[in-house]
Length: 394
Image (cartoon, rainbow, N blue to C red):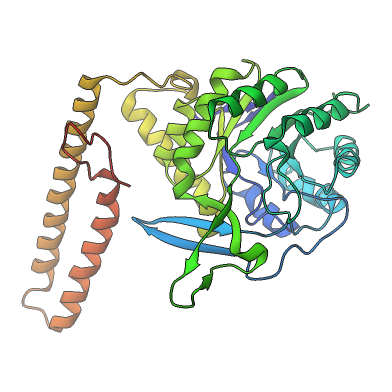
C-alpha cells in the first residue's frame, strides 16, 4: 500500500528519516535500518570530521497538541564521508533490504565533488542527496537561493565522471516567492541527472527568545538557527505543490518539514510528494515514529478508499464550498463521537472505583489523566464553524 519509488529506487514504505537528527553514528543508522523506515539516510557529510557549532545548538519547543517545533544551528557536525560510506554504515540499509542514501554538505564545491566520487564508487550506496539548503554554516550562503551558484554546482556535477553511477537528488531550502520557485526550477530542469528533489529544509535564521533569561534559546550565530517541526509544515506543503507544478515530471519530490502524523504525510503526498521524510519528530520519538506514521497513513488511505499512494499523489483539488462544508460536517461528527467515547470511558472509571477503597485523590488523578489523553486526541479535530474561517486549528 505504501510502496513508492525515489530516483528509481524502490521503497517498501514511502516514509523514512531526514538527514540530521539521530543519523550521525553507525548505531543510529542501524536502528533506522531495523525500523519501519523505507530507506536509511545518513548524516550530511563533509570530507573530514567536524564538531559543528558550540552548544547548546538544538532545542525543541512544545507547541501544543503533542506537536513540537525545533530550532538548530548545529553547523553540520559529522564524522566525515568515509565514516558514512564504511561497510558497517552501508549495511544498515543493505542488511535490511532498504536503500542506503548518503547526504553531502561539504564546505565547498571541490569537497562536495570529492565526497560524491567516494560515495558513488562504494558498493551498497543506493543514492546521494546533495544538501544545497543548509542555513547553519556561519559566513556561508545558502546555495539554493543563489541561482548563479546553483548552476555552477550542477555544471560541475554534470561533467563528473561518476555522475551516472548512482541516482543524485538535491535538497532545497524553502522558497517564499513565485519568482524564486520559477528561477530555481528552470535551472534544475536543465540537468537530466537530477532524479529527485527534497523539499524543504529548515527555515533559516529564525530566532527564539527565552523570556525569563532574556537571551536567545541557542548559543551559535547570535541565537539564529533553522526552524523545523510542526510550524514549517505549511511552508513545506506550499513548496512541494509549487515544485511539482514546475519541475520535470521525471523528477521525484520528497517532502519534509513538520511531519508528525499520517495526515501530515498524506497532505504532502496529495501536494505531489513521492515520499516523505521525518526529522524533528524522529528526534523526539526515535525509530517508532516511522511505524506509527505509516499505520496512520494506511488507515487514512483505507478510510478514503485509496489502495496506493499513486491514487492520490499530486491530486490536490481546487477549493470548493461544498467540499469545505462536507469536511466541517465530518469534523463535527468525529468530535462528537470522541466526546461520547470520553464520557463513556469516564463513566466506566467511576463505576470501577465506586465502592472501592481508592483514595479520592487517586480517582481524581485518573480522571485528570483520562481528560489529558482525550484532549490530545481531540485537538487535531477542533474545527471553527464559520463561513469566514473554514479551517482546522492544529
